[in-house]
Amino acid sequence: EAGVTQFPSHSVIEKGQTVTLRCDPISGHDNLYWYRRVMGKEIKFLLHFVKESKQDESGMPNNRFLAERTGGTYSTLKVQPAELEDSGVYFCASSQDHWPAGTLNTEAFFGQGTRLTVV
Amino acid sequence: AQSVAQPEDQVNVAEGNPLTVKCTYSVSGNPYLFWYVQYPNRGLQFLLKYITGDNLVKGSYGFEAEFNKSQTSFHLKKPSALVSDSALYFCAVRALAYSGAGSYQLTFGKGTKLSVIP
Image (tube, rainbow over all chains, first blue to last red; front, side, top):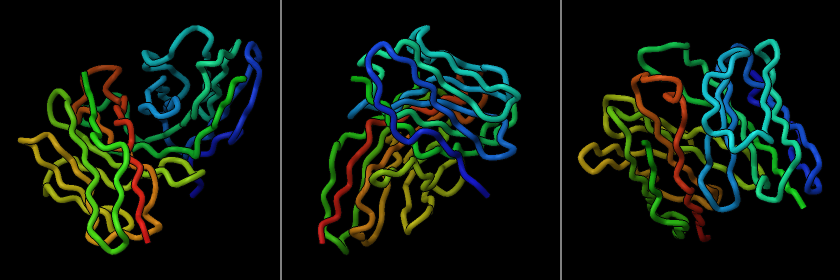
């Protein structure tokens, strides 16, 4: 079974440009998450999709970030325009938790991440 | 609010010696705890989790973790370290019970770099 895949693995862009990151979750996983790790800091939650719906986007830093999950399959995260502080590793994860659930008990599986460098 | 503390940025251990990577947490209600590992140039890999039951949880690659409710800790351990265990280790927590849209968020620690010396 294929895991969570992310594309590209690396991206170097100039400040002010646009970048789009893609995530393909594990097949059958309704839940898809985006996280980000800025160098040397914690991995921070960005947002959570259940199928094609955004359930929690409380971690999105500002309106330069736009996430979509058309058809409830793969997801994209667009940064427009990119700023220097957006540099970091962007992780995508998916899980089988059922929404809503009384008890959450399945782990999230992560992709290899996209390393974004804004120069 | 949830939080995770990994007090050591780096842990060095000699190959063959036991290793411990520390983690303490704070969460409302019962915790759902995880350890993930990131090898160089790789993604986050799930190692093990604690939900309920036995306080000693066994995971991948010979790792185990001990849940201590009174100390709110979930330390990662391995009886005999290998050079190939050298990686970045992350502890994470979320609440076990659903309490709204934010329930699914994992809160991570800063990570601990483990170096196993031959």
